[in-house]
Image (cartoon, rainbow, N blue to C red):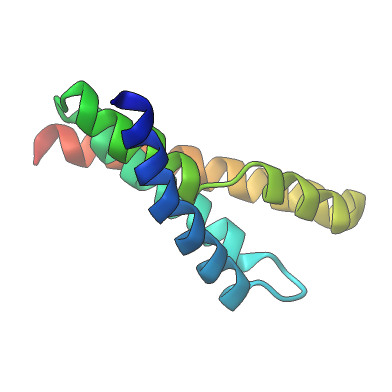
Length: 110
């Protein structure tokens, strides 16, 4: 059952990520940055809540795992070259970790 819930969440998250990233990515991978930050914020919110194992599988592991992307982030960072790629890595990493922390903080007090 848990595997099915993960697959169901990912089946929604992955196409949504693809559509958003395709819409906003051009010379600069803004779409991938946005989905990774939004997904991290949502994961922080979900992590602060006492969710059942099934809800965690569906929403946190499935949806957030499918919605966010490390592979596209890595490929895009490499494609930007050493200087711009390093800046993209720093901005994405700090923004995503900050968004996750913010989501956890808000979820803890809401």
